[in-house]
Amino acid sequence: MTPELQAALATSDGWDVPHAGVVVTRADGTTAAHGTTDLVLPIASVAKPLTAAAVLGTVATGALDLDEPAGPTAADGATLRHLLAHAAGLGFEAGDRTMEPGRRRTYSNWAYEAAAEHAAARTGRPFAELLHAHVLEPLGMTATVLEGSPAWGVRSTVTDLARFAAALLAPGPLPAAVHAWLTTPAFPELDGVLPGFGRQRPNGWTLGLEVRGTKDPHWSGSRLSPRAVGHFGRSGSLVWADADAGVALATLSGRDFDDWARTGWPVLNDAVLDALSG
Image 1 (cartoon, one colour):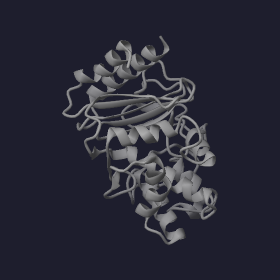
Image 2: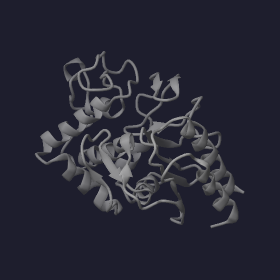
Image 3: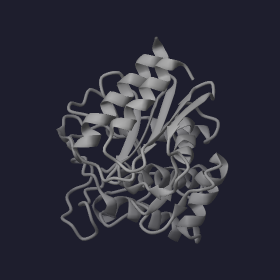
């Protein structure tokens, strides 16, 4: 690890959190780690891209179709694709207000729970089994476990999450179709609220991850490319991958998202990209 990259990762030491850990992976497979990286912690909504990858892996086998009706608003036109893109018109939690699918990006736990339930029902397999078969086992994520809602109930380590983030840089660890779905914008014209950062016009997402685009304010800092994808969670968890820069990052903290993350994550991300491009 270069002194510049070491100093960049050490910016996490200034976070007021109990268990800061960061792993950076480059496209050539080299990694750099700092802090607490092998402690199992809640990852909150970073569970969603893992869940998306499991559902998409099931689609890639032919057992599901992204455009088949799915979820509570299926009668109004919602499909599995809508659910994974936060475009199915479902409120945040089960039973919340619904709207016509495809009108607005509405960030939703309910949508991801519905997508996982749909995949399990159609395949006759528990969703935890699908997650293990399509994501955890092929990526070697041996410390990661689903303990509740597929939208937020996963525990993992920074090391495991870095394996997932690195798989977003290029096809290979994940099937090419799954990689494309996870990194290609879906319903890119939709506006919506990005939790913690307000309304974004547009609020771009793939099937599972947020697209950096030109959003402001944002957790990413100023150096990630518009094509970069990522996701953060309420528990102070974050993953991102920037294929243009050839860099992926994962971090956990053990403290809920707050101002420490709004200010600390952009500093870390910019410092890492500066160190690797210098």
